[in-house]
Structures are given as structure tokens and as C-alpha cells.
Image (cartoon, rainbow, N blue to C red; front, side):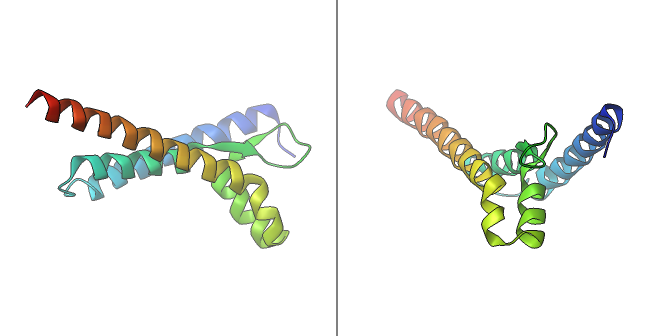
Length: 114
């Protein structure tokens, strides 16, 4: 399959591409008036792109979970989608709940001070 060096290079290229996509997403979301919504969307996009999961069931290599979800769903059937889809959805929900809780706490603290 891949050597360890090719695997590292693939992740480097993917992370550079993800950074470029996040830059474009930051640019596209700059005009959203509500800062909290804008930041939660940005955090969700970052988590979506960066959560890793195992490439194969017995393998030791990691790949982006969303890519594993799509490929397994297409080639192995809808049931295989959930092998990498479950951790991806849990990570997304966790990040969105945590970031929303932080903004709720900040909003309550500002409101109490005023």
C-alpha cells in the first residue's frame, strides 16, 4: 500500500489543503452579522475536516473521517458508512455543544455585568 513516508506526505498535503479550505470558509463567513453563529460554523467546519478515523477496520493508518464515510458508504454499502460516520457526528455534536456553551456562558456573564 503506502510507505510511512508517503503516508506522512499525504497528511501534510491534506492539512495544507484543509488550511486553504478553512481560509476560504473564513472569507465566505466574514459577513455573517452574529459573531457567535459565525464562530460556531467555523468550528464545525474545522472539526468536520480534521477528525481522523482508521482507513480500514484492521489497519493502523488514519484518514479524514468524512472521506472514510463517503468511500465506505459508496463502495461497501450504507451500513459501512457508520463505522467512521459515528465518531465524526459525535465529534461535530460535541464541538458544537461545547462552543455554544462557551458563548452562552460569555453572553450570561456580559449580561450580568451590565
